[in-house]
Amino acid sequence: MELHATARHTSFRTLGVKVRLQRGRGLGERMHHALRVALRRHRQAIIIGADAPALSVADLRRARRLLQSTQVVLAPAEDGGYALIGARRVALRIFTDVTWGGPAVLAQTVRNLSRDGRRYRLLRTVWDVDRPEDLERLRSLRLSSAARRRARR
Image (cartoon, rainbow, N blue to C red):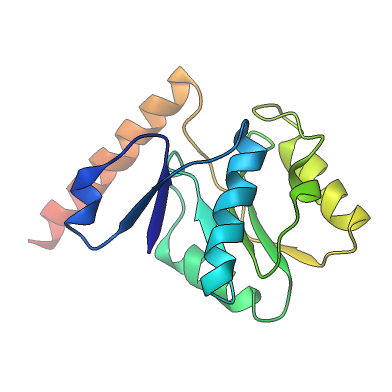
């Protein structure tokens, strides 16, 4: 497992995770670089957003499974972006002409995939933490998880 981060995170090394600094001028270049580096050593690679607590292990497994028969997998986010992208092959043009952080990120990426002739599949739509109101949703998720744990005891 590799973590591409904007700063060095030594705590991940104790878990056996390789930490690499992100490279690229913008989000698209950074994602392209991370996928390209991972695909040099693996047949498929998946990037997930650290701000997507709704992504589950089942989502990751499904993405991995879908990548056996398609070139790219995306998990749409409720705000018009995406929380996960997986690929077997990658090209920078997939990430160009995308207004990062805007409501059309997924649509623009899908347009680029179609223009490039790449097959893709979509996972279920998830939410991510982008705005202050999303923090309340995150708090309620944590509270409900804690309540479920207490109920099992």
